[in-house]
Image (cartoon, rainbow, N blue to C red; front, side):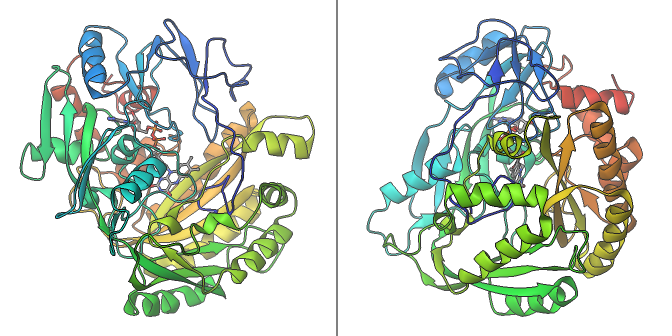
Length: 512
Ligand SMILES: Cc1cc2nc3c(=O)[nH]c(=O)nc-3n(C[C@H](O)[C@H](O)[C@H](O)COP(=O)(O)OP(=O)(O)OC[C@H]3O[C@@H](n4cnc5c(N)ncnc54)[C@H](O)[C@@H]3O)c2cc1C
């Protein structure tokens, strides 16, 4: 389905409306207003920008620059270094905590710095510019290996949306639905970084390793990545195996899937609070390798089976009749049991950036609403009691949960600010948020309670999706956060690389 919500993979929308979220007029409210096309190169003055998914981070930047290629990028950045409002950097604009935007900043839109460079077919490493999005990279890899029996392909990407850049992925240290992978840092061989002094430096595990560790997962605060080298894997064919089950059976199913060599998998669960299955019943899907995969045709991407109409029905149902939405989804999913996909293609799930309009039409006029995600990490053995706790909490507070999925991650022992400090179950919750003061305050309270439940179990949360965590929560999940802020100021004393996200944390930690 092509997805409006994180991880609803497998639905296809035949015509996806492209929008830009950049406008010269102020937005009507916190949700922003109708997006206008991206300007060819530069907006040439203040402009409003916003994130794609929540539309809750409208920001008035000083100007927008849209370089075309790496050389142009380096030249424009060097020219901008003496500015006073800082430089902010955006790729696909899916982060929802204002990481890509800084009020009054010189704002770089990197989506045209997007060349795919050399593929080393011996080592399986490809060089890309930071604005490359996953579908383009995958297309190029296919085109360059037309008859390879075992072509190189990506290891992992985000599921739930595809038009996300490699630069944004590196800066957030993303993950996909791998069962045996660490976050993206494991796939980064090296990158070049433009620092606040205007120097372009190489960074890898052996060259400038301290910059390497800080930049990955550093949300653009240590410099601008101008190119990166990504490690690939040999493409395999994977067979999807779907089991309708309940969360208490997941540990056993997971163990057996992992023992059987499954590479990917997840558990998508019911969000219908009026049913017994709420946060209990779901579909557990795993992807079992069944052989190497050349460029021959197969089932293609899982997203090629449902139409736009069915997708629209499902997203609407998920808001209006959660029990029926869950049943419809499970029934669809079960029909895909046994299908085979290339290991990279099964990670695609086209995203409808204007899902808000589908919902507004279904609801009729009313308060603007959108989805905001949170992702929580708990040790896998705490999954069942975590769900018990969250179920009671969400019922008590009538939390408007639209979609949820569990995935798994291996530890990240490399980055400075790791979110996967051990093997973790990753719980993703998409909440519907009303764009009123009260609606946003309520969402903030919902997110804080969820974070506390993960922290109580030795877990953490993802910094990407919002910035509602309290200082205590940030410090518990990321004990080196304050050290990271101090270190950033040492390396970038003029705060050249800036964002409203960064400014928020400077205030929260009293370092401003
Ligand atoms: C629907 C949806 C589904 C998602 N699914 C997943 C998922 O499955 N797994 C997951 O881990 N995350 C997921 N995310 C989160 C997403 O991966 C991150 O927000 C990611 O950063 C988005 O990439 P982007 O290109 O949109 O980056 P942006 O949002 O534009 O930027 C994100 C950060 O990267 C920085 N940045 C961008 N380019 C550069 C550069 N060249 N140099 C330095 N810094 C740079 C920006 O300054 C910013 O701090 C999802 C988000 C949404 C909305």
